[in-house]
Length: 41
Image 1: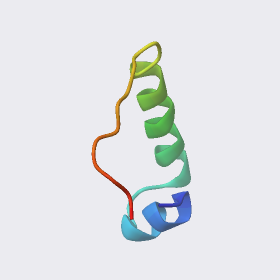
Image 2 (image 1 turned 90 degrees about the vertical axis):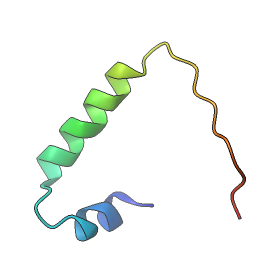
Image 3 (image 1 turned 60 degrees about the vertical axis):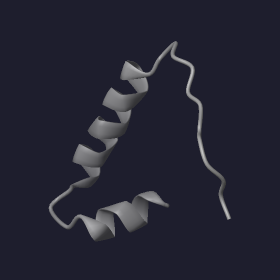
Image 4 (image 1 turned 135 degrees about the vertical axis):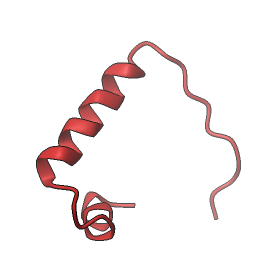
């Protein structure tokens, strides 16, 4: 899913809000190990 798809799907979300959310998430998970479960098709 691209940034453009997300912004299109949430019309009230601004570019700045999106960037802030991604920055926040990146800081929250810094130093954490993430495991992706499931398979992509």
